[in-house]
Picture 1 (cartoon, rainbow, N blue to C red):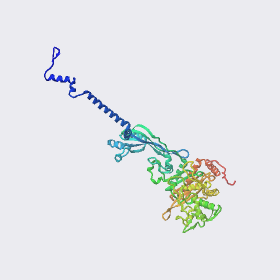
Picture 2 (picture 1 turned 60 degrees about the vertical axis):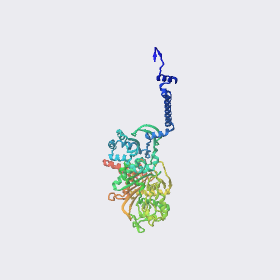
Picture 3 (picture 1 turned 120 degrees about the vertical axis):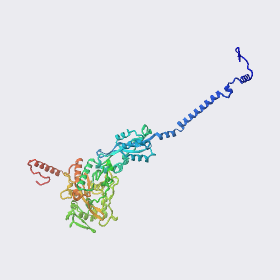
Picture 4 (picture 1 turned 90 degrees about the horizontal axis):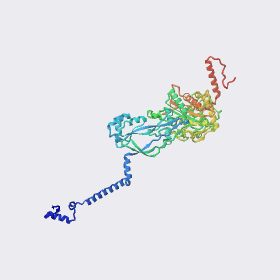
Length: 617
């Protein structure tokens, strides 16, 4: 208590309490009650310091020690490695014209997990894709645990944009390439086609798939939950486009062969046909056509059987196209000469319990006459003068009974039994001499004829420009020339293929008509052939035409009638396109003069008689 400004001492309990506080050094009430601010501040700062250290340690763990783990976890959710599509190599003909090209397209894909979260958008998506809603729902449900499923592949980019514009969660697109064939069905069997993944499935697309395919690239991107790319991170590897391929095919000659073969099939009512054109000097395949055919741009619309390249896969009995080779075998063995005579009376000879017959009794024929008249009896007489092994080995040299080595997928080797094998009997050699008892492909026949036209040198056929395969001599050049001149008479007056003659050119050829085998023998169904070379003086082209199962009631079934015109019309165009000089100029000039005379006569202009080249004055 204060009196007059002075503190008076207190007595009693209060005084004692204050005295004790003063004796304790003047501590505050908080201190006397056990509360120490300094210590508490120290404790708080220590706690905060420890927390900071913990946070720094955790940050160090996340950013340094365990960085890769957490980076992988993040990448697994948002970073994707996607392919970079690459285009397949272009296929061109020998002149650089495109035969197969790759066009960029888009493929729509979806994330089933995201799409199934928005079932209300599925009807809209199904309409845009052009598919039933239940089919879309089923496809997504089957892949509910996946993050990727194709919804519609290889569509026009504009159509893809319309679908993406709907902004449906989980729907995106990716670039792909689709194969396009400008020539369509005309060259379908040679090129083949690719599948939806752009892998070769048939033809040269399959044979050269590794060369054409290329290597896709890859890049890493960040995608949002809707599958949209929001950032390109980096390129993992660059895409390597496929390499181009230049074929030996000439698309112009290919078109001619396809057109003329189609005309023949329509006119004769045949079930199928094949045509092969080879460059005699190199063995390169200039054209190869087959019917029925298919559109390689819409493979699914045609039957599977139409995809077969019959010129290299179908085995046929070659019929009378074998006779020039039988004559060549006899000439090489020295058992006949070009002047040898054969008495074919009465038009047949025995062959075991069967007969070898001619369509007519040709009487006495010389060696050239055997080919010109296509005498089975004459060919059988020549074969009888040859030993079994001698005859067999000669035909083998020309490639019968083995693949040509063209490299075309699925090429057949043919059937050519050897002496002593189960397929060889006492009648085999005689029937083989005129084309029965063996099987060959149209390409094999064309290869053999090209060897005759090449002075006896056989070239392995090739589908690639400038890629000459193995070559070997199979016949003396002189004998090859003699046989060629004999074959020339086939297309001249008195021969079996006058419809294969080409104005201004000497044509060497041989017709063939073989009956089709059936259960227990041969049926009344036929295959008509014509195999020829032009021009005779220096053959440039070898061509084989096979017309299978023609309707006899239309144009008959003989090879000269149904296959000969295909050869003539195709070769006329090819000779003109390749600017091959005529080797029968006199006949051409005479025909031109006669045509001019007829024109002038029709116009009422009097003309003098037009002399025929080679005629006596």
